[in-house]
Length: 42
Image 1: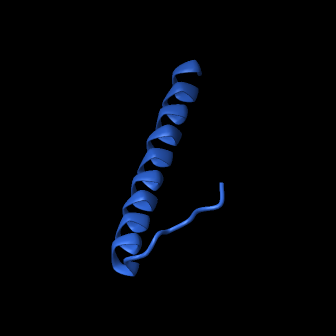
Image 2: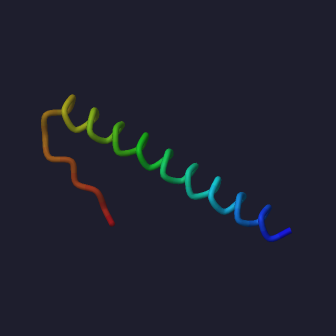
Image 3: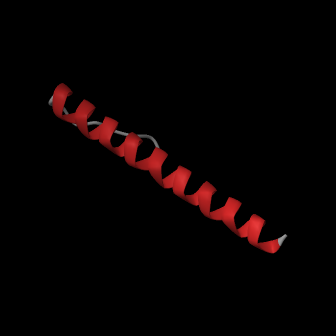
């Protein structure tokens, strides 16, 4: 049982990091395309 939970947790982390990578890539491309300072509200 515990192993299944651990696997699910790892998959969740991997998925989140993958989404973050794609978002970072998209923002980077958008930033380069716009050619202007991209200000993100945090």
